[in-house]
Length: 586
Image (cartoon, rainbow, N blue to C red; front, side, top):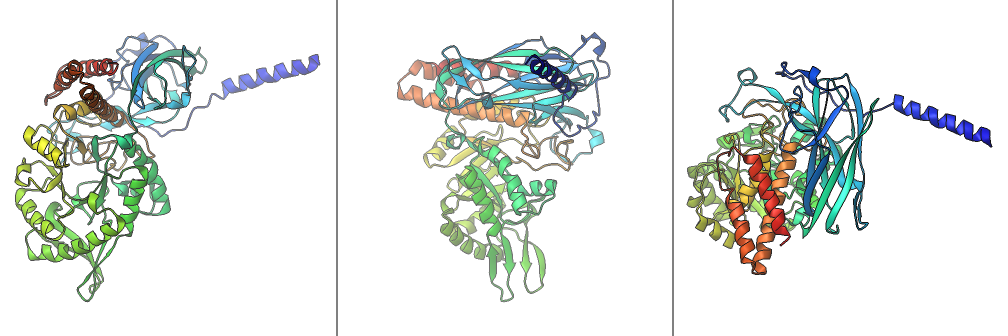
């Protein structure tokens, strides 16, 4: 018997040694070379061994720089039931490659309640090449703009190899179940380090007795335009093949889980010209037959819309566009047996010949599918002359659709009864009486940011707090939601270089291939959650006649009516979030 125990002990010892020797970390892709590393950092002052700390989510760390933070091993956060909250840690080392793996324990309360560790997701944050705002919009050569690398892309792994003289962030998201019992919970985040003693960090989670409903029930009108063709190109699969569909589902589910309300459809190809790396193809096949009649194939359109609806995005279908950039349209001509490109401006006979037969058949198809009431004919930043001519035809042949319009011409007053979904450029004023009248008509009013906005924005160099600010501004300005033109119009190598031939880096996408999230996307989502919390508290305080609390809440929100970046943005957001959670306990 003693021999058996001796052999068992030897085996355990050998197995333990083998595990230490085989400290395996997850496979991941190589990051880009840093075009402008900080070569003045004195890493010799960093103590030996891996350094680690809990820190704020407001910082984008620089890979070549030593974190300028006070080291902490404790975090406290407050969240509603159903809310997602985040904590950021950062690792750095002056030594050679250090292998680490991480784990998080269950969240336990003093009363014995347990939240599984599965509610937490660990992501190592990776760096991507970025540039600068400079003049904002306009075609740019990379060599003319300062470039660097920015911490942004999430790699959903719990282990990593930390290289010498680099900083490596870890972003942990915690999704609080809706049925959680309110109270205080504790968890431990452990970093196991090859050849070193493990580090432990203590997480304190306070769950407020309020419920944030599922994202599909949020009223915030989120409209991030999707590009399914970028997914097909990046993964080298045939568009709309089973493999393509499988790749689309998780990344679009991520969008649905952020409260997305709108399905982006391209009626004809290149509705925005060739402005993206992956052009938008037609989701409806237009064919002019030999006898002069038109035939339309809705197979791709139906597949795409149904896919998005199955994921929970089902409030609106925005169809681009009856007024595309350049007024160029494409169709297959059966007589000539080739694709034809025509230029047809609104108001011309050529335009009517294209759109009258299409609208007559399209509305029949939508009625059959049950999608007619949620379909909008969508336009992006088109001028009043073209808009008026288009509306004249649309209102004659398909008035039931209504229009979705991103307006950078301050022209919304010209179409008071047509814009069922209107989005105005950030900072452009909308009369309060107009917003209230639109809401009374059950119309949607949102705002958007683009390449012309240095603040707030979601570029790869934008401070994380700007994403949160967007949600607060939306409520302060009395909008129904927010629009951003690009969810996933990826650059050629989106995991390495977020720069594009026009516009500041990151303007064309906010998530990464293989369903990777980002600091930008998560902070934007955080701001949307805050907006929903504000709405819920306003309705609750009004219903319960809690005038003092309602006044306090409204005063708090009005601090975000600003359109220029304050010096203390991070403090403004942090203090507002703390006050919001205090009011939630009233």
